[in-house]
Image: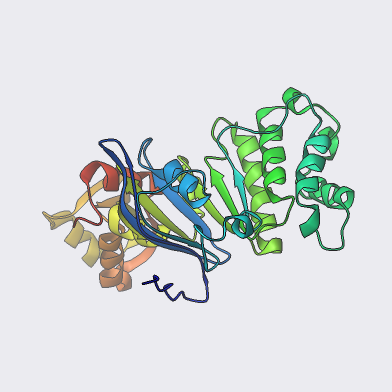
Length: 317
């Protein structure tokens, strides 16, 4: 009996169901399930060896899985590999461009491979356009091997998008880049995502990049621990801090006499520490009439990541 294809929501462009992968006795993926919505920036996080790159390689058809189902834009990856490859772009951790060729020559070769999918545009016009988009003009004629790390990364991403895919996979795209190069790469990526309505699935170790995602997953040893928006995860898994500059005498007395509140005083400013963002928000809501001037500091994705992975929180709670 043939297997019935599952129904998908209209906005789901990637659907992963019960994905499993074993390397001998090592279970690299233990029944991971998730979906990515059309047009979103989706973060796929975890320590080294968590299963991030293994997942990407399976989605891209570069690695066989031992169980589960993968659908891209409603297409089963087992039956539609060619069509799916024309819809996706990938930036690997290591570059695959020829170091002896110029940036333009590398992009021309890539575009020529997809010339049947370029609609009414010529290969040269497509390459010119993407060179402009990624601000490669100043070094488009230089050999790829002579470029800086940030310049190479921009050329790598341009290569992945030369055929106008619907989905872009980024495997730790800014690792090793200096802060200015990372900032420029992300400025360009965000602009292109908006103009092209591109779906991006990202693996990264930089939690400030994860904070920009619409939703994230955190993996540990091949198992999904949590999945939610960064804001929701920070509310649940990170601490918060409230700086109170002015408040009523009544609230000040309450704080000074409370045995439950963790606080310190710095030059007449009360600094209250709460174990979660939710606890801090609750304090503000319950005392808002007494708070005249205050600052609420939410936690960070770094704190979320450490709490979730080190304490084994999330799916097992």
